[in-house]
Amino acid sequence: MDASNLRHLFLFLTLAALASTISAHNITDILAGFPEYSSFNHYLTETKLADDINTRTTITVLALNNGAMDALAGKHPLSVIKSALSLLVLLDYYDPTKLHQISNGSVLSTTLYQTTGNAPGNLGFVNITDLKGGKVGFGSAAPGSKLDSSFSKSVKQVPYNISVVEITAPIIAPGVLSAPAPSASDVNITALLEKAGAKTFAGLLVSSGVLKTYLAAADKGLTIFAPNDEAFKAKGVPDLTKLTSAEMVSLLQYHASAGYNPSGSLKTSKDPISTLASNGAGKYDLTVSSSGDSVVLHTGVDSSRVAETILDATPLVIFTVDNVLLPQELFGKAPSPAPAGEPVSAPSPAPVLAPSPVEAPSPLAASPPAPPMSPEGAPSEGPAPAGSEDSTADKKKSAGHVSAPALFTVLVTVFASVVCSFFMA
Ligand SMILES: *[C@@H]1O[C@H](CO)[C@@H](O)[C@H](O)[C@H]1NC(C)=O
Ligand SMILES: *[C@@H]1O[C@H](CO)[C@@H](O)[C@H](O)[C@H]1NC(C)=O
Ligand SMILES: *[C@@H]1O[C@H](CO)[C@@H](O)[C@H](O)[C@H]1NC(C)=O
Ligand SMILES: *[C@@H]1O[C@H](CO)[C@@H](O)[C@H](O)[C@H]1NC(C)=O
Ligand SMILES: *[C@@H]1O[C@H](CO)[C@@H](O)[C@H](O)[C@H]1NC(C)=O
Image (cartoon, rainbow, N blue to C red; front, side, top):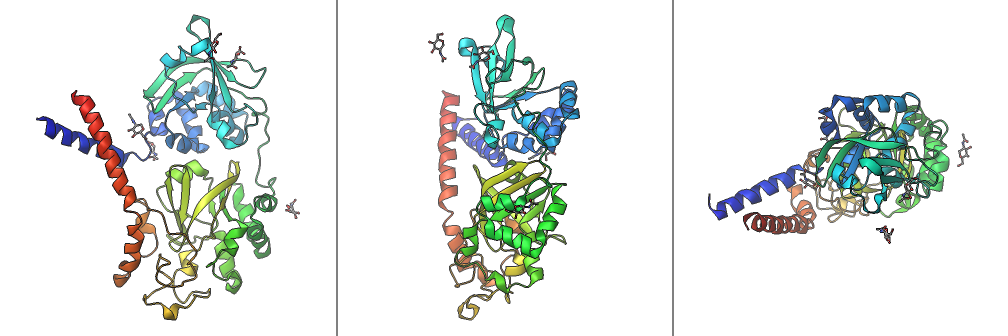
């Protein structure tokens, strides 16, 4: 095989690898090979921390064996277990060698817990100290904490993406274990929403009675997407007062999904997610796309960025979203129950269905254009526009996306060439 063939092969392999690795590793899969961590693995899945771990690179997972994990899990609710386990995910790569060569003997590492917003001060940091005799101790970085856990063995390393090592005991930050389990019935959802700038949405939930549906679902797991007040005032939002009460109920139920889906889980979700309004297969679904840290929901009519997490307390998570989510079933086809702009003046055969605001002054004109869909997400993005419709709208739509794949190709090529020359030097 000559150099040029090898180069092509290399480029192909690099492309193939990049194409198949949206998330680089799968912690569930890694730990599945080690029955002694089956309980730890189970709780990473149950708390959805596994999804968060899979979307990150350059991390270290401090695994507990079944004995240590069950001792922790036996006494605490899932929300507390989640906090305790988030302290065991270090946002830096430490393999056993690096752990034994900590400069100056001691270092503080950020953990996933620090990213939750529940960690005041340095509660979300872990102190790693190289003790005498090759022992490595772990403890909370909070003042006065002891190093009550230590490295016991290596489990698996994928340099420099993820390192999994076993430690002897959980790392306990002050207050973590005693935090009350926030049961959905203790949380005042309307008060939280109002505080987060989603007063209109909160008011609609109360006046329509849908809040009761939310509360009934919340104990088994609920994810709420609350449009902020600006979203309701945005130009192009259909006049919601024209909806019948049944339609209003569906619209509000559409803004929540059964099940606990924090942002890490949204990022990794490949299938459309059903909402509380979904009563049949494929009805009132949402699809999700993500790039980097941003997550976008697509209804088939419009799309919205997931803005902020205002509550993440297993099994309830509440996000704000930038736009009112307009389900296909209510706003997707003419005649729409909402005023459909001036559909008569539109040249397109089905103006309201068109995903692009370009053609007609449809009621959705203010929705931002959908970002590039992932291949999995694309087919479920509503019914395929028929015949002529794939002309202007879709071309306009795709025109904006040319730069991203092109840039991607350039980057991949440059990267592959660099790797090749290094490889063949
Ligand atoms: C590490 O992560 C990067 C980026 O996510 C990925 O492309 C690469 O394949 C991963 N490396 C290994 C050895 O899995
Ligand atoms: C990770 O692996 C587990 C078990 O092998 C599998 O069930 C799960 O779907 C995988 N997750 C992803 C995001 O691929
Ligand atoms: C390591 O310790 C020395 C003296 O004890 C100090 O001068 C130096 O700043 C420390 N380095 C780091 C990275 O903390
Ligand atoms: C880590 O903990 C040890 C023991 O409590 C302490 O001596 C050390 O200063 C701490 N390290 C850092 C970086 O705070
Ligand atoms: C929740 O908060 C709202 C104000 O935001 C208040 O009107 C309502 O009474 C509270 N509900 C409960 C059950 O405390």
